[in-house]
Length: 235
Image (cartoon, rainbow, N blue to C red; front, top):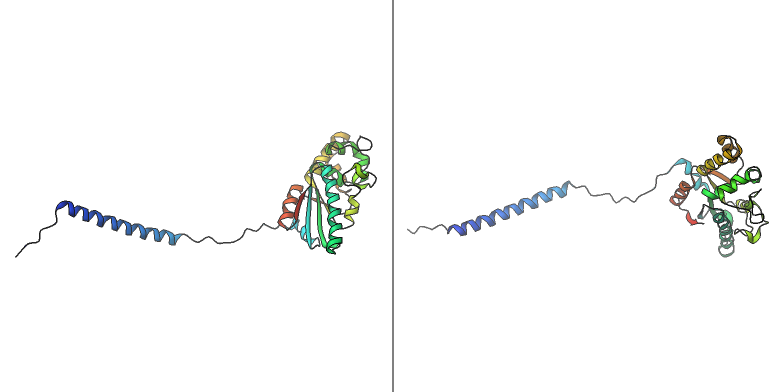
């Protein structure tokens, strides 16, 4: 009877190496499958901004279209007043919409904030208000004694071209006034006249232009308005 001879040693080693490599591959695949099973699929949930009650006034403004103007200088405020007037006028003439169909906000912050206060404040504190705004009356070349954006008498001397804060407010435009900037103005005025910054802050917010409201910060209002569907115009 013939005996089967074992394969030569090199061939047996090659076979065992292939066997071990195959077993290792199977084990790796098994471990990979376990790891993949342990990874939870990510929820495909779209991001949504948080809502805060103090910003709900943005949704209370009626309108089929929403627009917010962000202003930081006197020139920017003048442009915003002019653009707001154009926006209202063209929606009326070309789309048959009235101003009540449009939700519009003009945010005044930084150097435009001082123009959120009425003539009485400019008569009393015109010099520090003008200094804060880096502004001079184009007629007198000095600090204004009244809020120039409440006057129609400047014509082409100002870039609002006669469109006043009162005019747009009567058409439902909301003026949002930066509280942070108002605090800074109150401090500047107090330093100039020797009064109390807190008392002057209270006086200023008691003398806002028509249809104006205080907001915590103008820059925050810019963000919140966009998150609630307002188109942003930076003026």
